[in-house]
Image (tube, rainbow, N blue to C red; front, side):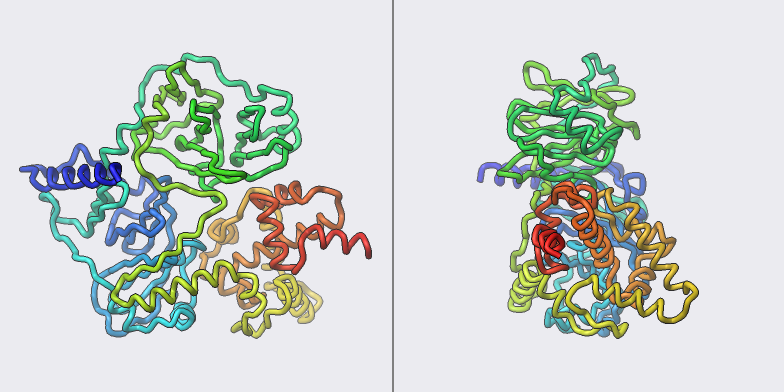
Length: 528
């Protein structure tokens, strides 16, 4: 309670000091965030904080989501716009408790599913499923649109986040950000790193794990000879339990702002601090095989001027201070002083389902919360019971059968490879070639196929009845099945090779597709 009161007092003081400032058109205390920081563009139209703490930013053509680490942009293609008759206002954005972002703009509606990381293709289907009418969307609460802010005349939106930060979205100059609780947690110095470099392999255990899991890719290693060992690689942070089993691989899809881990060190409280090519992160164990990741960057006072941290350059002094070396200087901080409230990535991810009334229809959003729980915990049943797709392909017992049926249908059209067959062959090869690099995103896949997300979605849906994310999962699970049949590798090793974060998650996805666990599947193959 004391911390909450302190944050509120700081926020009120900060706001009134800014508003009452005289003859101040520029803000030296503000940090300017623009395209150099990852924004898709600098024309900001709306800023809203999501229920899980992330920040949603609407530009003129995208929705960008900031997770205290980086911006992820989602293009709002005209073909994805849903006609919203009766709404003729400017851009207005709302974030609900299920992770959907609703953006209205002059007669159209865009919906972004922030949990899946994709713009909703069929908004009408979603509205019908959630029992939401056009009038419900039109009557969403509308925030005021400020025209000026402390002398600046191109302000479009102002948002105060729950962490004590102030976000000012401008017409053409990006975002002005200010938070005194964050900006002084780290200090940057131009002095050289004067300590010995931490060796890559400090123990025999480290060398064993490196040889088995990341040969030629290991940058650093932390072995506490206790519960966990940590292997920093160019592809993410690998965590092992005391039996040397892989617990998880953290990368850009699982909490980190960069895959390239440069150095690891443990503070006096037992938390693990790591430098990456883009910033500093803290990994905190909060239970058996459960972790929290917090990332720190430019908004926290870490200003590397575009340079990178150096491999192995981290040092803990007797007083607990940690020094991290980068090309051109060092960053210094006391872990106990890095305590400003922040967005935290939890592994395994925690559900954030809370009924919230964003436009005066509490019964509808309570229904939304129930639907969300059903979607999250009933995903497997939902996949098995889906109705016939628009393409005419019926969802059978598994995703594998759907895709295999599509391949057979294409081949029956002639002996020569068709354009569709070549397309699917290329797509499958891309997924298999990148299968060990973690969760392959739809955005990366569409870029490698030289297509936009919408085009890839529609073509793949037509040919196979699967969305890109379902198709990626199908290919990965097929490879898991093949490895179960043809090798004696453990499920944990197979999960690592096929890009799953843990054996538990791999088994869950495998069972949702094949209906049995990997161990049961392997036993059946042995019996056969």
